[in-house]
Length: 145
Image (cartoon, rainbow, N blue to C red; front, side, top):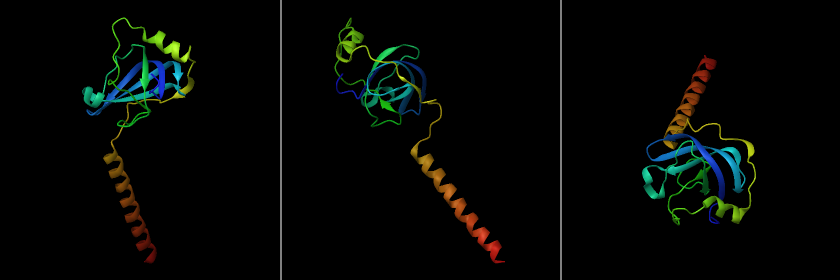
């Protein structure tokens, strides 16, 4: 638990996937470690690749997440780590370490439904820059006449 940068109790409400990365939107009900808004995003590698995991929409659960490394989200979730035996009370263990927690601040990630990969963003930016340069040359040409 102490290696996680953020620990919270939350419910996944939405999921998007690009085939490599799954991003979940969580409604946060309690924060135990870190500073969180009432809505946050958690990314994980899809299909269990590289310690990726999955979450059941609508099911509240304790979350142990880190700063994002391989994902484009506010936090990254992993499946690699210590396993717990059946019947282990994770919530009681969290509260014994971090106390009762606190309510999250208002706000947060509005939606994970819209995303673009880096190549799309770079290509779009290059296209806009090219159009701006061509427009500038066209404007100069008209003024010179």
